[in-house]
Length: 123
Image (cartoon, rainbow, N blue to C red; front, side, top):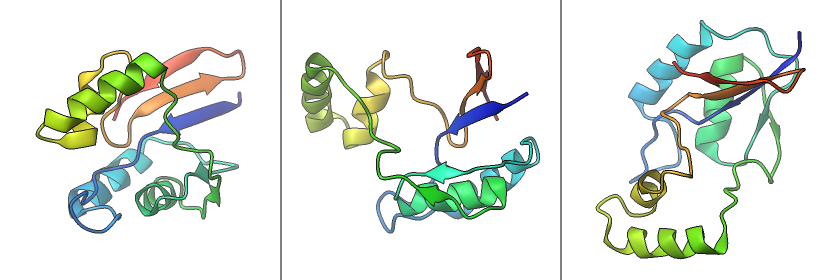
């Protein structure tokens, strides 16, 4: 059965370089043990997502500049912009504060099977 895994990048140093921190690398190595062999791996162009994809799959990902874009309604954008101004974690905190913008922990996400059934993938 064919499946599509949509997973979030692992922990990264958001105050420094756009790369995984040691905790993120360790998490990826543990999660990789739970994943099947992939035929195709796609990543956004962010260093942290490319690094996550490589560790999780053991493959060089194809880069798609459309990957990783968060689609929000105008109301959500407005809400996001207001929250990020005062949230201690800025933009990241704002995303987590809006419940309808489901956000997963590092290296977690969801799986879609060929019958379009969706199941969460939790590490």
